[in-house]
Image (cartoon, rainbow over all chains, first blue to last red; front, side):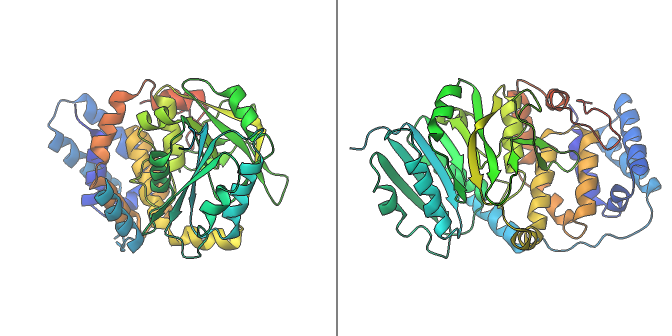
Length: 86
Length: 312
């Protein structure tokens, strides 16, 4: 079974410009979601879905870069700490 | 050898000063009689020495035994609570905070309401005002929580049990796997645990008569704290969303947090996606008795457009 959520997240991570779409408005999101639902109906490869989703999101996007700032160090420390304990 | 305690009260604490001793005192003296009781304190790397004499204080009351575990670095409430639960010896855990005061006869309401597969929560009363919270509701798309002001808002059932007073069987806590300690420090672990309980077939019920007085952080303390941990919270809420939501719902939650934390969103999402979230998501879905759509319908969760959330 294809995990669409994972593809959505991976696509957004791979394409920081898509975060501008994500932040915009519900119309942009609805367009992206609508495309995903059409894709779900069509038999195609997982890679194909991801690329197509990215294309649709990109089409709806307003150009703009997303500032990528460092996560506060506490998070990394805590995550490492928990990982060690886990 | 100490007798088997009837309850283990689990208290994570970090720099709570004299409030911890006051909480312990109220728990000890509020018992309806001198039944065996264990207090497990998890010192989350405090620097104020608040746990220094706490064992002696606890054991000055008949029937009380104390366990204090010190964490060497700040690990956060979910992890601390899980450590406390592992150290506990009683069949019933009472998870609470260090900044509370328990009422007289607090155990009677718990004894009356205890049932198999049921988690109880106390009513949280502000020490400084007339505020009372009868459990919490889950907010969408933030996945934050809001206090319930009506004890019968959901017929006495509670979407999210506040950790200020959550009563749960130790065996059930273990079966559920405790709090998600991959949600570091603060934020999302409390509602996530309650949603997991509901989806695994557990009911969460409020006890309107069990009034736990709680010191809410004043805005002057709370705002800088939340600002400091904003991206940690973003991380935790994104993890929560990925674990439970449909694609459509997840997009809305991601949008909410991308807007709320534009600088930290990318790295928070990267950290979540790079961890065990996908494995855990599959694992959880295989073990649920109910779906998130069921939870949303049951408690009337709606999206921004007022539409009822479903599984699609």
